[in-house]
Length: 329
Image (tube, rainbow, N blue to C red; front, top):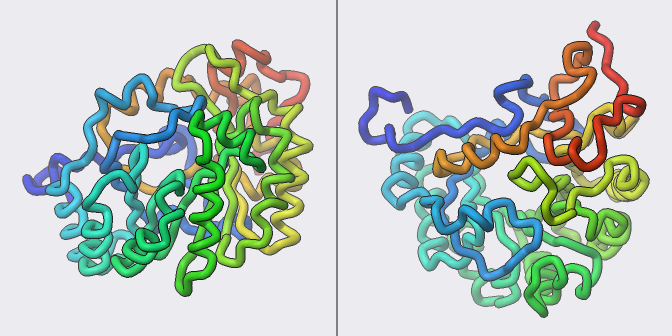
């Protein structure tokens, strides 16, 4: 899939957030998934939620989704070269696109062993739609859950009833054979204290293989919405949630949190991402975050930490007295 091939040249291979600064994290015991075996295609930039933490709310109208032709080129490439085993169909809300089942079928026909969708999960509350996606070949569902109760979740999504629909969708999937679910929670000042309760709330789900906690960043140099949580304040809740997930035998991933603060839980830090095809304009906005800032950056041997970003430092300082560099071997 090189630049000499005119059929795939429009497909921009976008880097992961950490790729420019750090080596990929090795697939370990905390996560259940090897990101190097997956590729993501961003095919939709509409959403019917209004999440306060949305990364792209100001650019959603300007970002251009991948075209069906670009997706087919990606599928053809993988059929020929078997670069990846899993395809992730994503976007602001991928279930809004009518062609999602057909894309899943095409992906399976081209040889992908797994097809995952990233979704807020509301449409999964419709049993018929769940069945349609599963019949088309979707076997992994990455579902966003923002809080442990309906009032908090709906306050974050700004859509009444969204929590009940998302949970109903997870419950319907839980009754299906050959389905794996994963949840993601963007951790903000509005929900960081709820992480242990969220783990408890989702504990009955049998198909739930992994929970992920992505610490919020604003795609800006300042935290204008006041949503960035303090790492020291969030840490005890995060570690409690991690302990509960370990006890349950579930996978765990934490993103955008200083590795040294995690102590013995540092194995849960996974800042790497699957290969991503997305409008290159996204990265212009992403770079405003200014990741990899740390007073110990030149002395730390960590290869997986993103350090602090500009908005975090502007709000809380550089935590120089709290962070600890890892020694080089």
